[in-house]
Length: 445
Image (cartoon, rainbow, N blue to C red; front, top):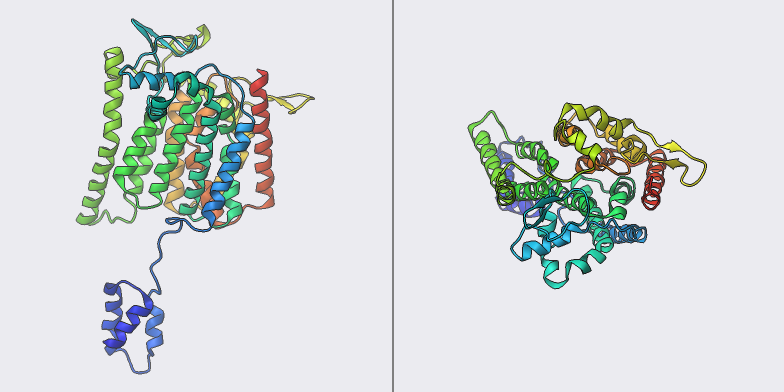
Protein backbone atom coordinates (compact mmCIF):
# COMPACT_ATOMS: atom_id res chain seq x y z
CA UNK A 1 0.00 0.00 0.00
CA UNK A 2 2.98 2.27 0.56
CA UNK A 3 3.77 1.82 -3.12
CA UNK A 4 0.21 2.89 -3.91
CA UNK A 5 0.69 6.00 -1.77
CA UNK A 6 3.84 6.86 -3.71
CA UNK A 7 1.87 6.38 -6.90
CA UNK A 8 -0.84 8.75 -5.67
CA UNK A 9 1.71 11.43 -4.89
CA UNK A 10 3.34 10.99 -8.27
CA UNK A 11 0.11 11.14 -10.24
CA UNK A 12 -1.69 13.83 -8.30
CA UNK A 13 -5.13 12.28 -8.98
CA UNK A 14 -8.15 12.27 -6.69
CA UNK A 15 -7.76 9.55 -4.01
CA UNK A 16 -11.16 8.01 -4.73
CA UNK A 17 -10.38 7.34 -8.38
CA UNK A 18 -6.88 6.11 -7.59
CA UNK A 19 -8.18 3.71 -4.95
CA UNK A 20 -10.27 1.92 -7.56
CA UNK A 21 -7.16 1.22 -9.61
CA UNK A 22 -5.04 0.24 -6.63
CA UNK A 23 -7.81 -1.94 -5.23
CA UNK A 24 -7.48 -4.13 -8.29
CA UNK A 25 -3.70 -4.18 -8.17
CA UNK A 26 -3.41 -7.37 -6.11
CA UNK A 27 -5.77 -9.26 -8.42
CA UNK A 28 -3.82 -8.46 -11.58
CA UNK A 29 -1.84 -11.24 -13.23
CA UNK A 30 1.90 -11.18 -12.48
CA UNK A 31 2.69 -10.60 -16.11
CA UNK A 32 0.81 -7.25 -16.02
CA UNK A 33 3.30 -4.64 -14.94
CA UNK A 34 2.69 -1.70 -12.65
CA UNK A 35 3.52 0.55 -15.59
CA UNK A 36 0.43 -0.75 -17.35
CA UNK A 37 -1.66 0.20 -14.35
CA UNK A 38 -0.11 3.66 -14.30
CA UNK A 39 -0.99 4.07 -17.96
CA UNK A 40 -4.65 3.51 -17.09
CA UNK A 41 -4.77 6.13 -14.37
CA UNK A 42 -5.40 9.77 -15.36
CA UNK A 43 -2.11 11.62 -15.07
CA UNK A 44 -3.50 14.87 -13.73
CA UNK A 45 -6.64 16.90 -13.25
CA UNK A 46 -6.42 20.17 -15.18
CA UNK A 47 -8.34 23.34 -14.55
CA UNK A 48 -10.59 24.36 -17.44
CA UNK A 49 -8.61 26.29 -20.03
CA UNK A 50 -8.92 30.05 -19.55
CA UNK A 51 -9.93 29.84 -15.88
CA UNK A 52 -6.71 31.49 -14.68
CA UNK A 53 -4.70 34.35 -16.27
CA UNK A 54 -1.68 33.18 -18.27
CA UNK A 55 0.95 34.75 -20.51
CA UNK A 56 -1.74 35.54 -23.10
CA UNK A 57 -3.63 37.78 -20.67
CA UNK A 58 -1.40 40.89 -20.95
CA UNK A 59 -1.46 40.47 -24.74
CA UNK A 60 -5.24 40.54 -24.63
CA UNK A 61 -5.25 43.65 -22.47
CA UNK A 62 -2.82 45.34 -24.87
CA UNK A 63 -5.00 44.41 -27.85
CA UNK A 64 -8.06 45.80 -26.05
CA UNK A 65 -6.23 49.06 -25.31
CA UNK A 66 -5.09 49.44 -28.92
CA UNK A 67 -8.59 48.76 -30.24
CA UNK A 68 -10.02 51.26 -27.78
CA UNK A 69 -7.57 53.90 -28.99
CA UNK A 70 -8.42 53.17 -32.62
CA UNK A 71 -12.11 53.58 -31.88
CA UNK A 72 -11.56 56.76 -29.88
CA UNK A 73 -9.48 58.25 -32.69
CA UNK A 74 -12.55 58.06 -34.94
CA UNK A 75 -14.99 59.62 -32.47
CA UNK A 76 -16.08 63.24 -32.50
CA UNK A 77 -19.64 63.10 -33.70
CA UNK A 78 -22.08 64.66 -31.23
CA UNK A 79 -25.44 62.90 -31.24
CA UNK A 80 -26.76 65.45 -28.74
CA UNK A 81 -28.39 62.69 -26.70
CA UNK A 82 -26.43 62.19 -23.47
CA UNK A 83 -29.70 61.19 -21.74
CA UNK A 84 -28.02 58.27 -19.99
CA UNK A 85 -25.92 60.62 -17.81
CA UNK A 86 -28.76 63.02 -17.02
CA UNK A 87 -31.01 60.12 -16.01
CA UNK A 88 -28.18 58.78 -13.84
CA UNK A 89 -27.97 62.14 -12.10
CA UNK A 90 -31.76 62.13 -11.67
CA UNK A 91 -31.56 58.70 -10.03
CA UNK A 92 -29.03 60.09 -7.55
CA UNK A 93 -31.55 62.76 -6.61
CA UNK A 94 -34.41 60.31 -6.17
CA UNK A 95 -36.18 60.93 -9.47
CA UNK A 96 -36.71 59.02 -12.72
CA UNK A 97 -37.65 62.17 -14.64
CA UNK A 98 -35.60 64.64 -16.68
CA UNK A 99 -36.42 68.34 -16.31
CA UNK A 100 -36.02 68.89 -20.07
CA UNK A 101 -35.82 66.69 -23.16
CA UNK A 102 -32.45 65.97 -24.75
CA UNK A 103 -34.06 65.73 -28.18
CA UNK A 104 -37.33 65.91 -30.07
CA UNK A 105 -37.91 62.15 -30.36
CA UNK A 106 -37.76 59.14 -28.04
CA UNK A 107 -38.88 61.19 -25.07
CA UNK A 108 -42.16 61.04 -23.14
CA UNK A 109 -43.72 64.34 -21.98
CA UNK A 110 -45.27 63.96 -18.55
CA UNK A 111 -46.53 66.37 -15.94
CA UNK A 112 -43.43 67.78 -14.27
CA UNK A 113 -40.88 66.77 -16.88
CA UNK A 114 -39.91 64.03 -19.33
CA UNK A 115 -39.39 60.30 -19.11
CA UNK A 116 -37.26 58.01 -21.25
CA UNK A 117 -38.38 54.65 -22.67
CA UNK A 118 -34.91 53.10 -22.62
CA UNK A 119 -33.62 50.48 -20.22
CA UNK A 120 -32.40 52.06 -16.95
CA UNK A 121 -29.36 49.94 -16.13
CA UNK A 122 -26.76 51.97 -18.10
CA UNK A 123 -27.81 54.98 -16.05
CA UNK A 124 -27.62 52.93 -12.85
CA UNK A 125 -24.14 51.82 -13.86
CA UNK A 126 -22.94 55.43 -14.18
CA UNK A 127 -24.38 56.62 -10.86
CA UNK A 128 -21.00 56.37 -9.07
CA UNK A 129 -19.48 58.58 -11.77
CA UNK A 130 -22.25 61.16 -11.30
CA UNK A 131 -21.25 61.51 -7.65
CA UNK A 132 -18.04 63.21 -8.78
CA UNK A 133 -18.93 64.92 -12.06
CA UNK A 134 -21.88 66.75 -13.52
CA UNK A 135 -24.00 65.33 -16.35
CA UNK A 136 -22.57 68.05 -18.61
CA UNK A 137 -19.03 66.90 -17.91
CA UNK A 138 -19.94 63.26 -18.45
CA UNK A 139 -21.60 64.16 -21.73
CA UNK A 140 -18.35 65.75 -22.86
CA UNK A 141 -16.53 62.56 -21.97
CA UNK A 142 -18.99 60.35 -23.84
CA UNK A 143 -16.53 59.43 -26.66
CA UNK A 144 -13.98 58.35 -24.05
CA UNK A 145 -16.56 56.43 -22.03
CA UNK A 146 -17.97 54.59 -25.04
CA UNK A 147 -14.48 53.77 -26.33
CA UNK A 148 -13.56 52.38 -22.89
CA UNK A 149 -16.75 50.28 -22.85
CA UNK A 150 -15.88 48.90 -26.28
CA UNK A 151 -12.32 48.14 -25.14
CA UNK A 152 -13.74 46.34 -22.11
CA UNK A 153 -15.98 44.30 -24.43
CA UNK A 154 -12.88 43.37 -26.44
CA UNK A 155 -11.03 42.24 -23.29
CA UNK A 156 -14.04 40.18 -22.20
CA UNK A 157 -14.27 38.50 -25.60
CA UNK A 158 -10.55 37.64 -25.34
CA UNK A 159 -11.29 36.01 -21.98
CA UNK A 160 -14.35 34.24 -23.38
CA UNK A 161 -12.31 32.88 -26.30
CA UNK A 162 -9.90 31.40 -23.75
CA UNK A 163 -12.79 29.79 -21.88
CA UNK A 164 -14.13 28.29 -25.11
CA UNK A 165 -10.68 26.86 -25.86
CA UNK A 166 -9.18 29.16 -28.52
CA UNK A 167 -5.49 28.91 -27.62
CA UNK A 168 -3.81 30.60 -30.59
CA UNK A 169 -3.26 34.32 -30.14
CA UNK A 170 -3.81 35.12 -33.81
CA UNK A 171 -7.25 33.51 -33.66
CA UNK A 172 -8.22 35.50 -30.59
CA UNK A 173 -7.05 38.65 -32.35
CA UNK A 174 -9.24 37.69 -35.32
CA UNK A 175 -12.27 37.37 -33.02
CA UNK A 176 -11.85 40.63 -31.12
CA UNK A 177 -11.10 42.65 -34.25
CA UNK A 178 -14.28 41.26 -35.78
CA UNK A 179 -16.33 42.42 -32.79
CA UNK A 180 -14.85 45.90 -32.43
CA UNK A 181 -14.03 46.86 -36.03
CA UNK A 182 -15.99 44.40 -38.12
CA UNK A 183 -19.52 44.83 -36.74
CA UNK A 184 -21.86 47.70 -35.87
CA UNK A 185 -19.92 48.27 -32.65
CA UNK A 186 -17.71 50.76 -34.51
CA UNK A 187 -20.75 52.73 -35.67
CA UNK A 188 -22.23 52.62 -32.17
CA UNK A 189 -19.07 54.06 -30.59
CA UNK A 190 -18.74 56.80 -33.21
CA UNK A 191 -22.37 57.93 -33.15
CA UNK A 192 -22.81 57.81 -29.39
CA UNK A 193 -26.08 58.72 -27.71
CA UNK A 194 -28.33 56.94 -25.25
CA UNK A 195 -29.39 54.21 -27.69
CA UNK A 196 -25.84 53.15 -28.50
CA UNK A 197 -24.42 53.25 -24.98
CA UNK A 198 -27.12 50.75 -24.07
CA UNK A 199 -25.76 48.35 -26.72
CA UNK A 200 -22.23 48.57 -25.33
CA UNK A 201 -23.38 47.89 -21.77
CA UNK A 202 -25.65 45.00 -22.80
CA UNK A 203 -22.79 43.44 -24.79
CA UNK A 204 -20.53 43.69 -21.74
CA UNK A 205 -23.05 41.96 -19.50
CA UNK A 206 -23.82 39.25 -22.06
CA UNK A 207 -20.14 38.49 -22.51
CA UNK A 208 -19.72 38.21 -18.74
CA UNK A 209 -22.65 35.78 -18.58
CA UNK A 210 -21.14 33.68 -21.38
CA UNK A 211 -17.76 33.65 -19.62
CA UNK A 212 -19.50 32.21 -16.56
CA UNK A 213 -21.40 29.70 -18.71
CA UNK A 214 -18.07 28.34 -19.98
CA UNK A 215 -16.58 28.44 -16.50
CA UNK A 216 -18.09 27.57 -13.14
CA UNK A 217 -21.69 27.98 -14.35
CA UNK A 218 -22.94 29.56 -11.14
CA UNK A 219 -26.66 30.03 -11.81
CA UNK A 220 -27.12 32.96 -9.42
CA UNK A 221 -24.36 34.98 -11.09
CA UNK A 222 -25.59 34.13 -14.59
CA UNK A 223 -29.09 35.17 -13.57
CA UNK A 224 -27.92 38.50 -12.15
CA UNK A 225 -25.99 39.25 -15.34
CA UNK A 226 -28.89 38.20 -17.57
CA UNK A 227 -31.25 40.43 -15.59
CA UNK A 228 -29.08 43.53 -15.79
CA UNK A 229 -28.51 42.90 -19.51
CA UNK A 230 -32.31 42.84 -19.88
CA UNK A 231 -32.49 46.24 -18.16
CA UNK A 232 -30.05 47.52 -20.80
CA UNK A 233 -31.49 45.88 -23.94
CA UNK A 234 -34.72 44.00 -23.34
CA UNK A 235 -34.47 41.44 -26.23
CA UNK A 236 -31.49 39.75 -24.57
CA UNK A 237 -33.85 38.30 -21.96
CA UNK A 238 -34.43 35.49 -24.44
CA UNK A 239 -30.84 34.38 -23.89
CA UNK A 240 -32.21 32.83 -20.69
CA UNK A 241 -33.17 29.83 -22.81
CA UNK A 242 -29.49 29.21 -23.51
CA UNK A 243 -28.43 29.89 -19.94
CA UNK A 244 -31.03 27.44 -18.63
CA UNK A 245 -29.83 24.79 -21.06
CA UNK A 246 -26.22 25.29 -19.97
CA UNK A 247 -27.28 24.44 -16.41
CA UNK A 248 -28.48 21.02 -17.62
CA UNK A 249 -25.18 20.01 -19.19
CA UNK A 250 -23.46 16.99 -17.63
CA UNK A 251 -26.64 16.20 -15.69
CA UNK A 252 -28.50 12.93 -16.10
CA UNK A 253 -32.20 13.68 -16.45
CA UNK A 254 -32.93 9.97 -16.15
CA UNK A 255 -32.05 9.97 -12.46
CA UNK A 256 -33.84 11.66 -9.61
CA UNK A 257 -30.61 13.26 -8.40
CA UNK A 258 -29.96 14.71 -11.86
CA UNK A 259 -33.46 16.14 -12.15
CA UNK A 260 -33.28 17.65 -8.67
CA UNK A 261 -29.94 19.23 -9.49
CA UNK A 262 -31.33 20.78 -12.68
CA UNK A 263 -34.44 22.04 -10.88
CA UNK A 264 -32.28 23.59 -8.14
CA UNK A 265 -30.07 25.38 -10.68
CA UNK A 266 -33.05 26.64 -12.62
CA UNK A 267 -34.60 27.95 -9.42
CA UNK A 268 -31.39 29.77 -8.48
CA UNK A 269 -31.09 31.12 -12.04
CA UNK A 270 -34.61 32.48 -11.73
CA UNK A 271 -33.79 34.03 -8.36
CA UNK A 272 -30.85 35.79 -10.00
CA UNK A 273 -33.06 37.28 -12.72
CA UNK A 274 -35.98 38.10 -10.41
CA UNK A 275 -34.63 41.37 -8.92
CA UNK A 276 -34.22 42.89 -12.39
CA UNK A 277 -37.69 41.76 -13.48
CA UNK A 278 -39.19 43.15 -10.29
CA UNK A 279 -37.31 46.42 -10.75
CA UNK A 280 -38.55 46.63 -14.36
CA UNK A 281 -42.20 46.35 -13.28
CA UNK A 282 -41.71 48.75 -10.36
CA UNK A 283 -39.90 51.28 -12.57
CA UNK A 284 -42.80 51.25 -15.03
CA UNK A 285 -45.38 51.48 -12.24
CA UNK A 286 -43.91 54.56 -10.58
CA UNK A 287 -43.61 56.36 -13.91
CA UNK A 288 -46.77 55.46 -15.81
CA UNK A 289 -49.05 53.79 -13.30
CA UNK A 290 -48.80 50.40 -15.02
CA UNK A 291 -46.11 47.73 -14.59
CA UNK A 292 -46.53 46.72 -18.24
CA UNK A 293 -46.05 50.18 -19.77
CA UNK A 294 -42.37 50.67 -20.65
CA UNK A 295 -42.91 53.99 -22.40
CA UNK A 296 -42.22 52.86 -25.95
CA UNK A 297 -45.93 53.17 -26.76
CA UNK A 298 -45.90 56.77 -25.49
CA UNK A 299 -42.62 58.17 -26.84
CA UNK A 300 -42.68 61.05 -29.31
CA UNK A 301 -41.79 59.97 -32.86
CA UNK A 302 -41.72 61.43 -36.36
CA UNK A 303 -44.98 60.84 -38.23
CA UNK A 304 -43.70 58.03 -40.47
CA UNK A 305 -42.34 56.05 -37.53
CA UNK A 306 -45.46 56.67 -35.44
CA UNK A 307 -47.50 55.21 -38.30
CA UNK A 308 -45.44 52.03 -38.14
CA UNK A 309 -45.88 51.84 -34.37
CA UNK A 310 -49.66 52.14 -34.85
CA UNK A 311 -49.48 48.74 -36.59
CA UNK A 312 -48.20 47.27 -33.34
CA UNK A 313 -45.12 47.66 -31.17
CA UNK A 314 -44.31 44.08 -32.18
CA UNK A 315 -46.06 42.78 -35.26
CA UNK A 316 -45.58 40.43 -38.19
CA UNK A 317 -46.24 43.45 -40.38
CA UNK A 318 -42.75 44.71 -39.50
CA UNK A 319 -40.99 41.44 -40.27
CA UNK A 320 -40.53 41.88 -44.02
CA UNK A 321 -39.04 45.35 -43.74
CA UNK A 322 -36.70 44.44 -40.89
CA UNK A 323 -35.59 41.23 -42.59
CA UNK A 324 -34.75 43.28 -45.68
CA UNK A 325 -32.56 45.65 -43.68
CA UNK A 326 -31.04 42.82 -41.64
CA UNK A 327 -30.17 40.35 -44.38
CA UNK A 328 -30.84 41.71 -47.88
CA UNK A 329 -30.41 45.46 -48.29
CA UNK A 330 -27.15 46.39 -50.01
CA UNK A 331 -25.61 49.87 -50.29
CA UNK A 332 -25.37 51.93 -53.44
CA UNK A 333 -22.12 51.92 -55.38
CA UNK A 334 -20.35 55.28 -55.83
CA UNK A 335 -17.11 56.40 -57.49
CA UNK A 336 -15.59 58.12 -54.46
CA UNK A 337 -14.41 56.88 -51.06
CA UNK A 338 -15.50 54.56 -49.56
CA UNK A 339 -16.98 53.22 -52.83
CA UNK A 340 -20.45 52.71 -51.34
CA UNK A 341 -23.28 54.75 -49.88
CA UNK A 342 -25.33 52.90 -47.26
CA UNK A 343 -29.07 52.95 -46.82
CA UNK A 344 -29.84 55.07 -43.77
CA UNK A 345 -32.32 52.54 -42.40
CA UNK A 346 -30.08 49.49 -42.52
CA UNK A 347 -27.77 47.31 -44.54
CA UNK A 348 -27.37 43.56 -44.76
CA UNK A 349 -25.18 41.97 -42.11
CA UNK A 350 -23.85 39.79 -44.93
CA UNK A 351 -22.30 42.98 -46.34
CA UNK A 352 -21.18 44.63 -43.09
CA UNK A 353 -20.00 41.52 -41.19
CA UNK A 354 -19.64 38.50 -43.51
CA UNK A 355 -16.84 37.09 -41.32
CA UNK A 356 -19.57 35.94 -38.93
CA UNK A 357 -20.22 33.18 -41.46
CA UNK A 358 -17.25 31.38 -39.92
CA UNK A 359 -19.84 30.22 -37.38
CA UNK A 360 -21.03 27.71 -39.99
CA UNK A 361 -17.86 25.69 -39.25
CA UNK A 362 -18.53 25.45 -35.50
CA UNK A 363 -18.98 21.65 -35.58
CA UNK A 364 -22.68 20.90 -35.67
CA UNK A 365 -22.54 17.31 -34.46
CA UNK A 366 -22.55 18.55 -30.87
CA UNK A 367 -25.34 20.18 -28.90
CA UNK A 368 -23.52 23.41 -27.98
CA UNK A 369 -23.50 25.00 -31.49
CA UNK A 370 -27.21 24.30 -31.87
CA UNK A 371 -27.96 25.84 -28.48
CA UNK A 372 -25.97 28.96 -29.39
CA UNK A 373 -27.69 29.22 -32.78
CA UNK A 374 -31.09 28.95 -31.12
CA UNK A 375 -30.06 31.76 -28.75
CA UNK A 376 -29.24 33.94 -31.76
CA UNK A 377 -32.65 33.19 -33.28
CA UNK A 378 -34.51 33.73 -30.00
CA UNK A 379 -32.91 37.14 -29.48
CA UNK A 380 -33.39 38.27 -33.07
CA UNK A 381 -37.09 37.34 -33.30
CA UNK A 382 -38.35 40.27 -31.15
CA UNK A 383 -35.90 42.61 -32.87
CA UNK A 384 -37.25 41.62 -36.29
CA UNK A 385 -40.86 42.03 -35.14
CA UNK A 386 -40.22 45.46 -33.59
CA UNK A 387 -41.53 48.53 -35.35
CA UNK A 388 -38.39 50.67 -35.02
CA UNK A 389 -35.87 48.50 -36.83
CA UNK A 390 -32.96 50.57 -35.51
CA UNK A 391 -34.08 53.82 -37.19
CA UNK A 392 -31.07 55.77 -38.55
CA UNK A 393 -28.17 53.33 -38.60
CA UNK A 394 -25.37 51.64 -40.46
CA UNK A 395 -25.85 47.91 -40.79
CA UNK A 396 -28.50 46.54 -38.44
CA UNK A 397 -27.50 47.58 -34.93
CA UNK A 398 -30.08 45.42 -33.17
CA UNK A 399 -27.99 42.42 -34.27
CA UNK A 400 -25.48 43.44 -31.59
CA UNK A 401 -27.84 41.85 -29.07
CA UNK A 402 -27.17 38.41 -30.59
CA UNK A 403 -23.63 38.83 -31.93
CA UNK A 404 -21.91 37.63 -28.70
CA UNK A 405 -23.51 34.21 -29.24
CA UNK A 406 -22.53 34.21 -32.93
CA UNK A 407 -18.96 35.02 -31.88
CA UNK A 408 -18.90 31.99 -29.59
CA UNK A 409 -19.85 29.91 -32.63
CA UNK A 410 -16.91 31.48 -34.46
CA UNK A 411 -14.70 30.66 -31.47
CA UNK A 412 -15.80 27.02 -31.62
CA UNK A 413 -14.78 26.98 -35.28
CA UNK A 414 -11.40 28.53 -34.45
CA UNK A 415 -10.86 26.01 -31.69
CA UNK A 416 -11.08 23.30 -34.33
CA UNK A 417 -8.98 25.02 -36.99
CA UNK A 418 -7.08 28.30 -37.20
CA UNK A 419 -8.40 31.08 -39.41
CA UNK A 420 -7.08 30.71 -42.94
CA UNK A 421 -5.84 33.53 -45.17
CA UNK A 422 -9.29 33.56 -46.76
CA UNK A 423 -10.94 34.36 -43.44
CA UNK A 424 -8.36 37.04 -42.67
CA UNK A 425 -9.22 38.57 -46.05
CA UNK A 426 -12.93 38.44 -45.17
CA UNK A 427 -12.14 40.12 -41.85
CA UNK A 428 -10.18 42.84 -43.67
CA UNK A 429 -13.26 43.43 -45.85
CA UNK A 430 -15.41 43.78 -42.71
CA UNK A 431 -13.00 46.32 -41.23
CA UNK A 432 -12.96 48.32 -44.47
CA UNK A 433 -16.76 48.35 -44.71
CA UNK A 434 -17.26 49.38 -41.09
CA UNK A 435 -14.55 52.04 -41.40
CA UNK A 436 -16.65 53.35 -44.26
CA UNK A 437 -19.67 53.25 -41.97
CA UNK A 438 -17.80 55.29 -39.38
CA UNK A 439 -16.88 57.78 -42.12
CA UNK A 440 -20.50 58.05 -43.25
CA UNK A 441 -21.51 58.80 -39.65
CA UNK A 442 -20.11 62.29 -40.18
CA UNK A 443 -21.45 62.80 -43.69
CA UNK A 444 -25.13 62.01 -43.31
CA UNK A 445 -26.78 59.68 -45.78
